[in-house]
Amino acid sequence: MAELGALISRAAEKSYVRLKELVEKCNSSNLSDSEKKIGIHKYITKTKQRMLRLNVLLKCLSSHDSCFTYAADSLFFMYEGLLQQTRAPIYDVPSAVEVLRTGSYECLPKCMEDVGLQRLLNDDQQRQGLKKLDVLVRSKLLEVEVPKDITEVKVSDGTVLLCVDREFKVLVTLGYRGHLLMWRILYMELFVGELDDNDCCRTTINDLIQLYSILHELCVALVMNKVVRQVQRLCKGRWKDAIRFELIDNIS
Image 1 (cartoon, rainbow, N blue to C red):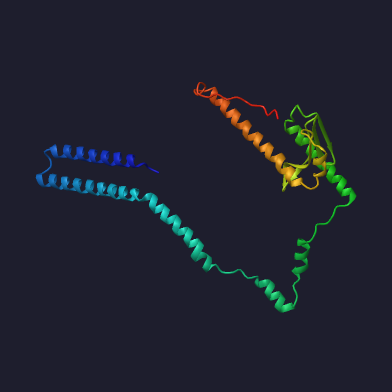
Image 2 (tube, helix red, strand yellow):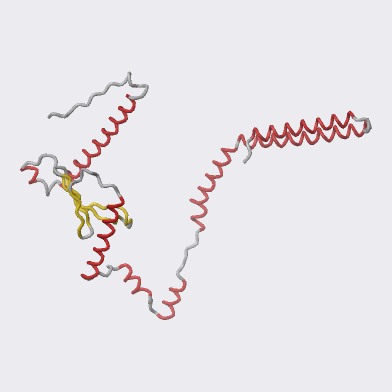
């Protein structure tokens, strides 16, 4: 794709070179007056055509964005209107012919089997599958960096138990929505916070409320941590004399 400035400079350069050649040819004594006039006429005609092309190009470029917008809008409305109305249905002709000819549909049991429950694994297959999953989990733990603060890492039955003293305990495994290399949380227990008798009685009633409060406090803490880090980064720059901040601990 050539730039407009390059095209204009090239056209001007070409016109200048042709004019220079014409002047040198006219200065020679070999040409008659009629031949010189013919050469000048040809030069003027070609230069005029070149400038007209540039003028047309400039006019097209002025409406370039609007033309693309109009084309995109036209394609969108054509898809929503004309193409949806003219779309032909796809009929299952072989199955219809089979039903009309034989009076039955042999593919129906196969369709019902595909929709039905999957076949359960026996004990040997389950043990072999858990062993393979243990190998995958151990190899995954060797590939990733486990935080040093985690005090216990235990692999069993295709799961990993991660514990941090007086903070949390979480049980994870591999395989999340078809992605084998992604971790999936099976169980999580927090050891921080206070829980009185009334909270214990309301545990089975307000499970969703407790889930919301824990995740909400986590999100708020993450946002505040990000804000503090951004303020600290600004204080190290040229705004260091204009920003003052102080962390206030919640004593209550």
